[in-house]
Length: 219
Image (cartoon, rainbow, N blue to C red; front, top):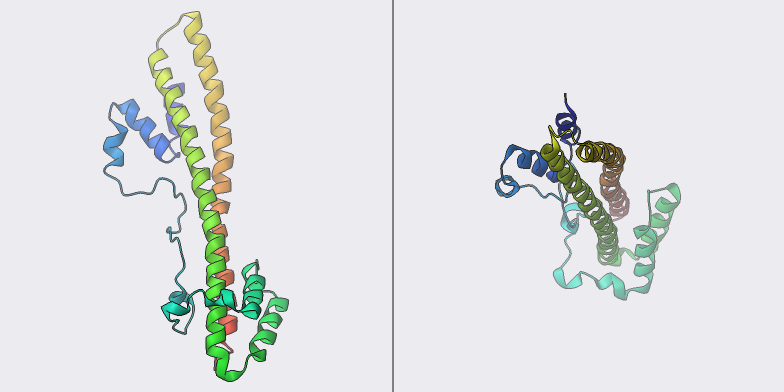
């Protein structure tokens, strides 16, 4: 396997950039391929891209539209929401906090107050998920840029193939070194992407745990 063929193989895992590279080497326009795909090239995660979790999916009580956001006007509820909204896991201490608060609410007010807490918790966790999503997309854009750089180098190798003058051989050596370095960096970053993709899922799990714990106190 010559270096050009090997390089194409090594970078075949790179998403859109590598696809564009292989297509370009085959003599087709990358736009032809992209136009026929329905893939969000900036979303690398196996999990589907869901910008917001709808409260109706995770909370059993219906909340009127005009009540959405009312938790911000209730000082005590806002305090609880901010505490719960920062959690990384539902610890025993957090469960105790939920119980203490839940049992302090008069029974005839519980649905209304718990709805406010649930609304606030979902809002806070959606904010945190959004921050992760932005970071993942930014990270992926950087990967795409790297793959485009590799594409440029491989195209240059194709142009240099068969040339034996000193300048050409020197340039081939430089490209080999650069692409090998880029591959190592890319692979390390790919591992990081897989971890980043788990972060929003972990947040959803914590949010669900909080709301299920709170829901058990509903009348």
